[in-house]
Amino acid sequence: MSKMDFTLANGLLPTYRRLPRVFVRGEGVWLFDQEGRSHLDFLAGLGVSILGHADPNLVAAVQEQSARLWHVSNLYYTDALLELSEALWRQTGRQAFLCNSGAEANEAAFKLARKVMHQRGAPERYEIITFSHGFHGRTLATLAATANKHYQEGFAPLPEGFVLTPWNDLEALESAIGPHTAGVLIEPIQGEGGIHVASAEFLRGIERLTRESGVLFMVDEVQCGMGRSGRFFAHEWAEVRPDIVTVAKALAGGLPIGAMLAEPSIGAAFKPGDHGSTFGGNPVAARAALAVLQALEERDLLSHVQRMGHELMAGLQMLQQKHPAILAVRGLGLMCGLQLDQDPAPLVAQALESGLLVGSAEGQVLRLLPPLIVQQEHIERAVAILDALFGAREAS
Ligand SMILES: *Cc1c(COP(=O)(O)O)cnc(C)c1O
Image 1 (cartoon, rainbow, N blue to C red):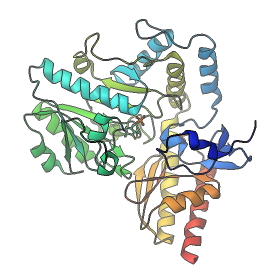
Image 2 (image 1 turned 90 degrees about the horizontal axis):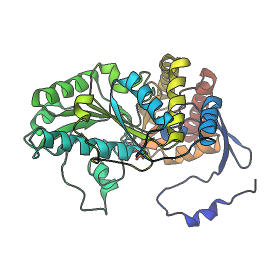
Image 3 (image 1 turned 45 degrees about the vertical axis):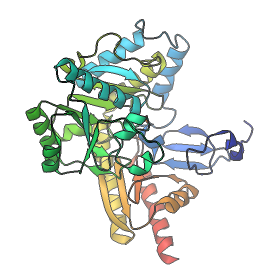
Image 4 (image 1 turned 180 degrees about the vertical axis):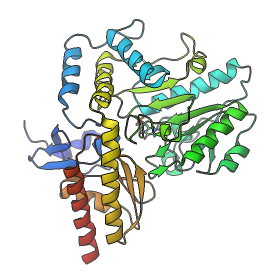
């Protein structure tokens, strides 16, 4: 393999602030760059690669399918599509609309919510209520649903019909629900917004208010779903039952996929022709998703995540006691954030130099999303690297 110079990136639109590393190979929790340097991956491609890199079962499933059939379109069925929809049905009791990303899954949810209200004879109910610090994607509608004004700057006008309410404030939500409301959309654990875990009371309150007012209860589990919280869906911790759940990132362990999962009575508002996606349910991505679902079950990954989540939390809390730059530790399962007293970007760059991939989130938060297969020894190493970096900053 010839060595690539990242200045070749002049051919890319400058939408990302990338760190100067060219990765060429991955194995488990490890990523290798073209110099052969190893890196402990505690970001998992933004919460995507939950089985780590090059998982043998995932690779085999994709290889088998890709040698047999790649694409047919949604004018027909494929064996992979049928098997995936059946597996999702068994896992969630919901019917799936398959697409390619989180934003698309949320778009499908907005369209379904409007269609449901239209069918109920209430087309004036088109608004979706969302929460401060919420993030739902980068398309125009999902941007309109996203709280951070910074992401919206320069892209006006955004589609109408999105109303922002404060996080963890049921009274404000109650007064926001009105004659135009179609549904309420929440991330049970906010990711981009800074790792804020919704309390069970808050989620149950949303469930109660939406039921009482006859509007839809929708959750965006694009980042926190698929086992990351230690349950299959993070909202399961609160024992609530949303009408619509969106997933994407980790669903196929690294191949592009998204799904909007709806209770059958709600999903029935969509008729043939109402919505679509050329690649949605692509057999190769569907096979990868099946391998991920199988791994979660057969390797008992949910209880592993709960155990490892406790270890990681304990390590991060130990760091907080030692280092005054850490103001708070938040998270659930393997979705964790350190609230810092400073911009985390320099620390993220230094961690990379020390062989550790971590990320950042809104509000000066250092974000950790390790693969769900992470082991105790990896957690100890990641915590030790962060410990040394915080220590060095204090010394300087
Ligand atoms: C990443 C993310 C999205 C957007 O997903 P894309 O695949 O980038 O479109 C939506 N919601 C949440 C909670 C996310 O974390």
